[in-house]
Length: 636
Image (cartoon, rainbow, N blue to C red; front, side, top):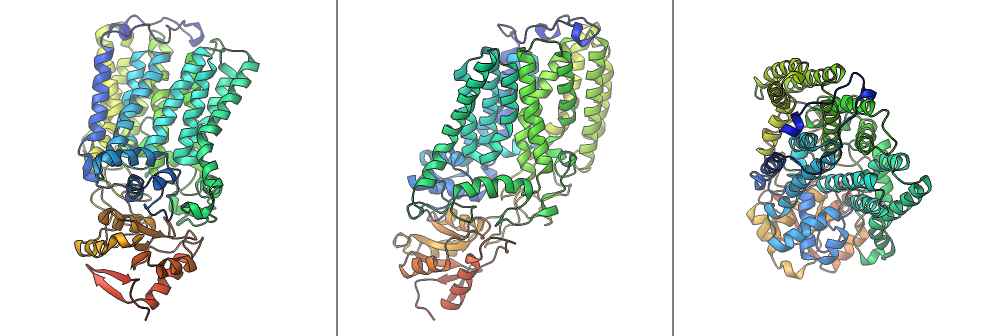
């Protein structure tokens, strides 16, 4: 580790120190083994006992199943292979899982391994991006922070679209760093393509990085200002092309030729983008949504540090903010095009803009959304820490590092104290090691052996808490729509597939009923599955049920399309009562699965009308505790 521990750059003030080059032409020999260990550990966290979570989020698992059975369903992201309705997101993440299911069959591994590999790739990209500007030691630190962030471990073991979103945005930030080094238009256009692809994963959330990327390019790119403007325009066109082509197809294809756009109230992808998945998330005005208000947690600048969110993402968030500012001070008099400052600004802008939006959004908000902050927290910590470490001969640099480490240990003690029954000795141990290492940082410049010991202790103190949460998360099975990382013991909007305010389960599994809930899939018994299989090939849908999670459980169990009345929340206006009556008259639907998932405060009541019509028009039979209505029987 001689390259990291060589004599530091001397200096009394930040602007007096001449920092070493951003990265050596060749890494020292220890870097590759350390990187392999890092990636191996990341892979172990992501892949260990992965199948224990089953379908994970059955909502997306059923859509991947549908995409493996029908190319039309694959293209649109339909919930069922008969193309009644799409999921409430664009389909990019489903394309990955759908192809995997086509190749390897429908099983938890084919669904979740691609997600896990995205996690390993994201860790590698964070390392590469930071190593490029701050050296291999800083890159390894950033990669370790990324790999051990609890919410990242959770979401890269899950089948939500957040995994692909984070991978694409991290790749975009890496290319942004390269573009700021080279000034090449093609590289910046590549950034635009990746952001456009991220838009096709989770719509407007992908654009939270755009303000920072664009501003840093305009200020710091190593080309003329006119060229900066032109190149930025090309990058913008790349975003529109990469993200807009699918939107254009959906809007141009007649509604009768495609599935209904789930999550919208008017079968419009534009309404989905700008309403339910867009500005409505900020204002809380989301027609067809459930919950709202305090049900999604208190808004404000303290949200990311509160009881629910803190253990997911905030372990090193205070450290990242301090180190980011300190890094900018260190580079205060660097030239305009200094790539270290440019890269730090890219990641810091990502962190600040996304963090501010998450803190203040009044609409639907889940703790796992904060995985989008993980690469930025990791990169800012790595770059800022690397810059200060290079100046450790200066008393002020050692002082900042010592304060940050001591503060991180104290903050970990607070976070671990929220789950006092989880490894009770860990909180005081982390705090004690952090304080000792902080004292060691004050004399770290005196001897290389001291530096090695201090670095080891500092890493253990800073990463001990999140690593423990990450390991616990990797050893827990998760399922449902609302999941959070780490041990039980905190309160919040729901840990594993249960609604705001509901009791917490003892494991990662949601409270499962045979019928299912709004956010937990149904779990049909063998007799119900046998009933669904009766003459299944003669029906377009073997059953219909209110709500996508309920329908998903029956579809995954039977392998045949099940119509989700009203989409995810049961509040989308599809099918209408008249449309469903026509489908029944034409013999397209065999069974109706009775049961309610609750009523949205807004949106359509078509699903309720259908349920009422079925209950008064067709005979019911109870199978494995589930009330089924045979829609092929004569009307009463």
